Figure 1 (tube, rainbow over the protein chains, first blue to last red):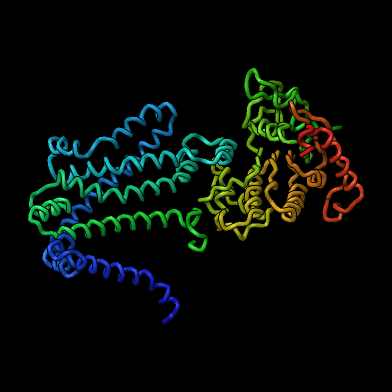
Figure 2: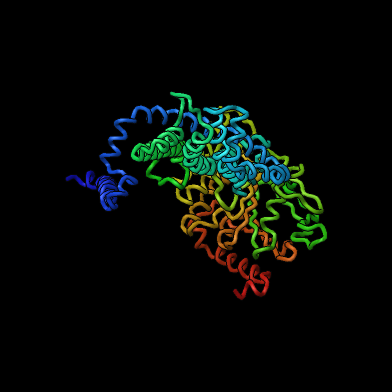
Length: 263
Length: 259
């Protein structure tokens, strides 16, 4: 075996071990309780039966996640620019931003249904509410965390305020922004799924993974419930991978969090 | 006839709190065009404060200060080389050298000409497309110097620019700095902790005393330019280093010289 192949082996070996462990756990349970933890063939069976429906639902949840996520990113950047404009603005607005994060989704949900009705817009708003806070906090922190030497340099260059913001603070904030984006990417599918569960559209063909979970739970289809969880998980991974890819493109040449050999 | 001073301080003073003690001054100083003035002194004697006043980054609390007859902070051809290289990590070397020109809206063609000239002066033309993280500490400092030189300054303020570098690199950069000075004849104010470096580079050395910062000694360095490795072995050079060291020790506060 080539050394290159050998290096790739551990992740695959671990995956094999994980699947074997899963199967073993199923058989370790008393026969009467095994239905609580489906075997791999049962899981595969659930995918065979519900695969197309799950994929369709995943598409809706993915769109809602991306929508809420993108909305949160855009609004967070705007809000951060406002927040760094002055300490007074920051101190005045911060409690409200915190409040946005504190509002329990479970309470917002029925209000949202009354306002915009069930379905994608509600799901997007809930996802936005969940992902906005880490984005705005990190981006603001980034815009404020500028090296004093760089600020002196720009003052020596008699930079205008917009030049300082655009050419110094914004690029310096990029690593922080991406940290916020990574956290938001993990939260977004969870948010969209929960939102779907609470305010999703039950109309056929437009429901997301949350509604599917509701459905399978009502019908006591445990393996299908597990399959839904696996799809939700995969969605989360996909979004994190997307954000990590974006971060790599923007940062790998110059940021110390990437090794120089990457560039 | 002596030329009119390029830098002129009269009873210049700085206090950080309105009612607090003066950290610097009152201080009188006149520097002629083309002089290379090193500033030595114990920590807290106001060396950096003096530089920041001249640069316009700090406003004086009293007295008068003019650079080329104008108030500080209004001059386009005054450049500051900071203690750290302060390169923008997200920009390549060439873009870093252009940063200040870009802020001052210098047209692109002129920007490119000055950038290439400055990178040539610090002998880093081949690193133009590198990112700062790919450079050594000495190379980063040379890029920082190139960024200042790209302004084609009349006055160059250097705040311990080689302080973080090893001795070899430091000596090399000192020699390069002198070679560039010989070609461009800017006026330098050079803050350093190293007596040897000050004597090697300067045409004049100011020794500051602390509390409040004031000029204790104003010493001419009458060693011929160009200076090189030979200079570092010359008896006159060694005598001067010893003399300046002794004067510096005399103004150090007791606890500092004990340390």
